[in-house]
Length: 206
Image (cartoon, rainbow, N blue to C red; front, side, top):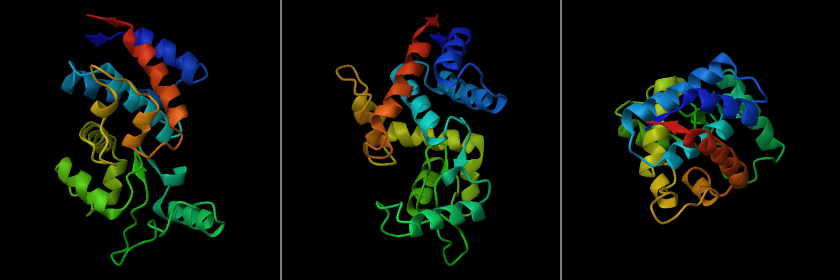
């Protein structure tokens, strides 16, 4: 079944975007839908809805790959994270992972799902057959961000939890699915976004 995109965009425009979707947001959402319909046409549509809800949250509704703190450059991202660190706002962080390493590369969050730490760049790069450690900003490229999100969320490469753990023939857990990305941080909020996307997806044509 294919998604009725006219209904889909009418629904989310009103429910999630205050009546107006920017071109960049449209392009990001369309790219996610296109990839889903091409590669996963028979998979559980709740997976797609939860991916869309995750991107909605992680990108601050931009629906495009972003840098952590929504900075425009590496330098600005590092500066903002350092400021928050010194102000004691990153209480869950034990080591400032965003600071440049010996090669001058920074491993702060990038992409649709805020990929952090060099080990994760290595792991996801291997999974999508791309050397992300040679050029971390590849994660900011739309197609690369898509590959990372799809592979990571479906195969449990971010936290070991995967979409099928929470959405399958016998269970459905919109809140606990947040463990796929980041424990239960903002779990209720992401669940709300995902359920709204699912309502838009569920109106389909054959």
